[in-house]
Amino acid sequence: MEWHGSHCKIFNVGKYRREASGGACDANFFSADNKDARILREKVAEFALRDMLRWIDGEEEVDIEDECKPSSNSPTSNSSGRSINSKNSNASFHENRDRIAIFDATNSTDKRRRWILEECTNPAKRPGKPTGVVFVESICDDEELLLENFRFKVSNSPDYKNMDEQEAIKDLKQRVKQYEQQYETITDDSLSYIKIFNLSTKLLVNHCYGRMSKVIVPALMAWNIGTRPIFLCRPGQTLSDISTDHDDYVTAVNMSLGSNDFSNLSRNTQKRLLRGDSLGPQGKKFSEALYEFVCEESMNFLRKRASVCDMSETGTSISGVVPAFSATTIGSNSQFPLKIYSSTMPRAVETVCWDETDFPVDELSTLNP
Image 1 (cartoon, rainbow, N blue to C red):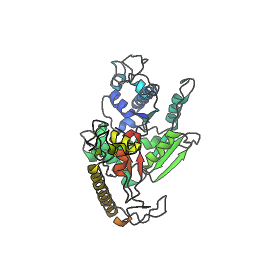
Image 2 (image 1 turned 60 degrees about the horizontal axis):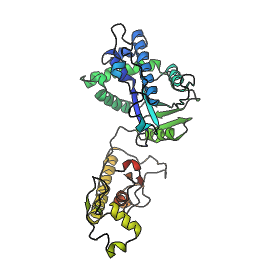
Image 3 (image 1 turned 30 degrees about the horizontal axis):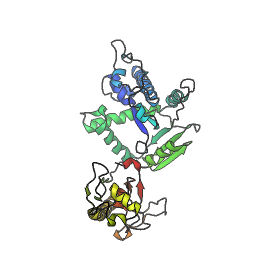
Image 4 (image 1 turned 120 degrees about the horizontal axis):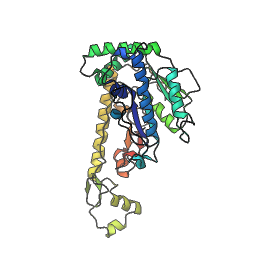
């Protein structure tokens, strides 16, 4: 969402919970029978949601360590006593951008989801502050995929820091069982929701309208637990006597601005030369070398993928079949799994526009210097 120009922030309820409880919590903390823990979980969810709504409204950021720090009398009371009214000093920078907040919590009961919806959308509670809500439900019953996700969770979550992996996975499985006892899938079709099955095998989308909701769907479809190579580079060397930004490497034009050679150039060519937007000889050599590099790396990736994954029975949304890739298929109309993003600067576009291929190129202003 940041990539699409919105200002996005994650409010992780687990972080609030660890601050309020004084550290990591084992599986028993998430039991429905643990009354004290349930009250604490509800309180920290309220803290997180309140801070989230303040952030959406452009109010001052809240330090969750202060907000969730227990007082001497109650493990869940707000001991900071601060009134949050002043505008964030960064608000002016973001005031013209969408604000998208992710309320990162299990939210596995209908009661919890109804509470979130009420707090975010009730016009009496939030007059003049319309806020859209989309629920994302991840459903997974693939044992191999679950185990891979468990490993990722225990290796990254502060709840399992300095814990043996097998012991951590055992505790996490117990926590999942506690969740399952309370879990209620979304059945209310009046809600805006997206259900994602087994990472991205299948998606169910209900009442999702507008630009941002439609950005979420392809993002969820891109979820994976594998790795894909990403390469970043600057444009090729330009031919100019004026540098357009401090990161460009330029070489001088071998002509005077008042010479006949320069005057005989078209106005657009003159502008491109002055802006440093035209590749010079070294830049063109770089573009050619980049093409060779991209082709080789992409083919290596395809060979590696083919060695571990049989996709012969998997269709695509374009043709219904997966083509047999080879070096000769790189070119027009091939479904080569490669995506190129470029800034809108002509020098950048020229660097990745190769006559030999029709590789798709997306020009994005977010990549501009």
